[in-house]
Amino acid sequence: MTGDDSSQSQSPFEPRPRGAAANAELALLLEVAGTPKPGNVDRHRDAADLRFDHFLAGAVGARPGLERAAAGDALGEAFETAVAGMSDQSGGNTQFGCLLLLTPLAAAARDDALSPDGVREVCRSTTVDDAAGFYRAFEYVDVAVPDPPADMDALDVRRGADAVPTVRERGLTLFDVLERSAPGDANAAEWASSFPRTFRAAEAILDDDGPPTDRGARAFLDLLAEREDTLVRTQHGPDVAREVRDRAADVDSLEEAEAWADELAERDVNPGTTADLTAAALFVALERGLEV
Image 1 (cartoon, rainbow, N blue to C red):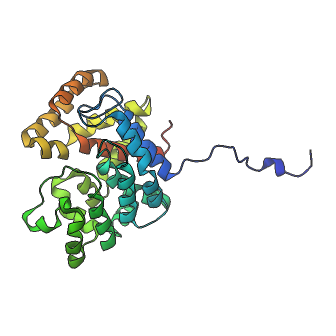
Image 2 (cartoon, helix red, strand yellow):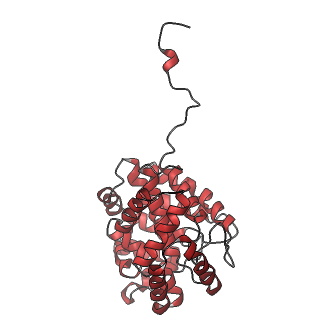
Image 3 (cartoon, rainbow, N blue to C red):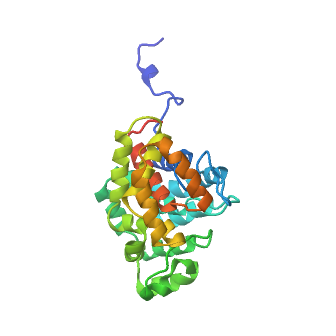
């Protein structure tokens, strides 16, 4: 053995930090593996047209787009790439809303700016081209969204790429589009207000104990009790959305949530927007040290 310190150099086989893209992919996997999350696909329950394995494939497929976001590429292109990869499975839309939240968070994490101020800067720095990428992403999967305000009919996201000329004509950035959608959409509201629910839920996950999948399931229930779910409201109306929120507030444990999860599955009531927020919160928690 020589007297130099070359033996102290890092082995290429020593573990390295996962990085933001890998943590974003892992957050998607932990979210869908958490159970029970009443009304949502989890490791114990499939939906009529979506299975647990579809979500696993969607998470893996989204990785190249998440890597682009974490590398500092244009956010609209990163999001479109993530959605295109996510859609490369036979089930359909598994995590569109999750990716809308994860791409700016992964971009903020790149510069150690994963904070409300940091993600605000990422979102407000988006461009018209980013908005175009967002609209093109709707070409890959069917996404249930509320009807737009009357003055935004030409910007209805369900128009997909056909809305891009209007976006360019009006000079709207991705932040502009989502800010206008915020009153009726919880994910857009996160974009418009620096992700307050995401960061609060992440802190709750970090303060919790037990496996990350259980922490995520409890965070899901807390988020669902906090506000009506956008997807439930879109698909079933305000009365059902209010009922689901109020019922979530009465659930005291994951054991108690099991029977309710079966009930919502039978009624095809899916609080999918709350699952999106849960995935985003799990990502922030992972970036801040949540152990798996």
